[in-house]
Length: 315
Image (tube, rainbow, N blue to C red; front, top):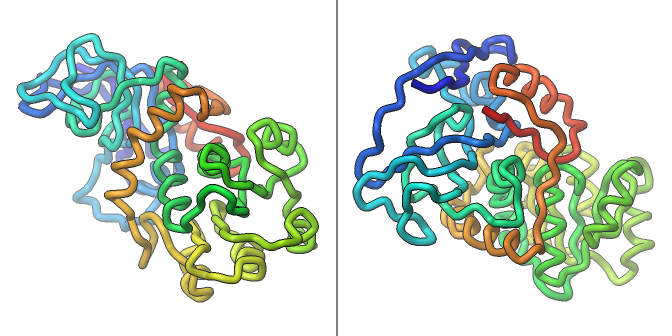
């Protein structure tokens, strides 16, 4: 048996319940994980909030797409992207279903080695925002010598995009509140305050222009300023402003209407994230941790949009 968090209905965090469920043994191509941490992401809230419909046939909904833990059993042919998986391996699992749990059966194809540089909580929060950031940087062709504007640079995806762009030797200008500027500078970005006059402040920093822009927040300001500053709209992407982005003629990425899910890019990005973290070029900022029983409180916190870094559930 394993404690797990499920959504028993559609609505707000009050629909979340902690249940005791059977786990069983892994089948061919599967592994059993003892979960040490599960990453919390806005998409988790959307699953039961109605963003993807309210089909009662999908209830109860198991939550959580990313986890870190220890392999406790393996099925036949348990081979992950980095090679064979063995009992006792310390791993990250992404993309999985039902990571908010004490124990989890996961496809071996989702299991990667945990970087030795990351704690359990950090490892649990690495993948979803990381693959999203790599997808955005790849779609906008950000590379060495480019100047890229990252809107919401202090958010979950933004922090990953900043570090990965710096590792690719790009110049990064990131929008954020004043409170986050020192942290962004430490990561190698040049922070600017959002709000009235943003485009002019970016021009002061980059008089020779901006090559690419990523919107990780979904505001009209982020889209408008990106379009104003970047000549080639094929090098502007949003992961949040799907309606506004479609009107502006920029790239839509992720699970929104008309967006490119980028599954192949995101799958390939997982090993790159492990390598970057192992080499010390990528860190995960943990904003807060909660026990499984307080999953509703974790979801309430992430809905504020003001957390800096990842929220992680710890069984």
